[in-house]
Image (tube, rainbow, N blue to C red; front, side):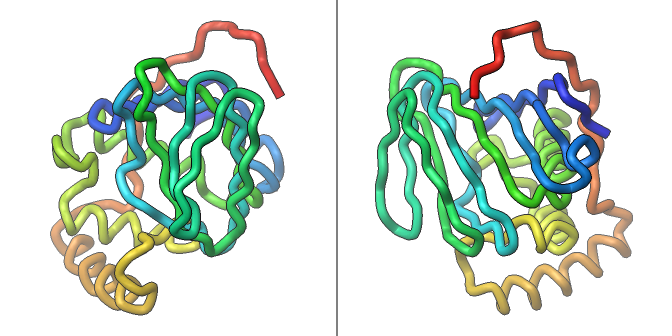
Length: 194
């Protein structure tokens, strides 16, 4: 179970997340973290948070993204709000590290999702190209975290049916929906912004 100060890294997508606040710390109201994207880093898939609003504040570097089909670019000091139900994705196409603060309201099980997704990556259980786990593991995750995250495509009903069926097969084969991050480390003390 992650806690404030824990650092999780995804070796394929080149993302690093430093937890500031978890659902447990805020009675479920807020998930807050610092995100660091190395040059070339990307979110593994365009996605939607069906029940959660997501906010971003760029601290350094340039954030590139797409929200509801519209391309955007954000520089230090700029803030973005992604309403619940809106397709979005982020990446760093610059030469410098991108650092932004992300807040998700309500938190639901966002911290657990990150621990599972990055844990699979740390243990080499994701595609070295996309950063996504195999279809059965992905189905297990997407079914278990369907209130926190769904893919932008295919349509939600298709995902619910497909991932529900595949998750059942995954359970029969012994896959688990949650996967612990092997050994989260604590972040070095850094000044907190925002």
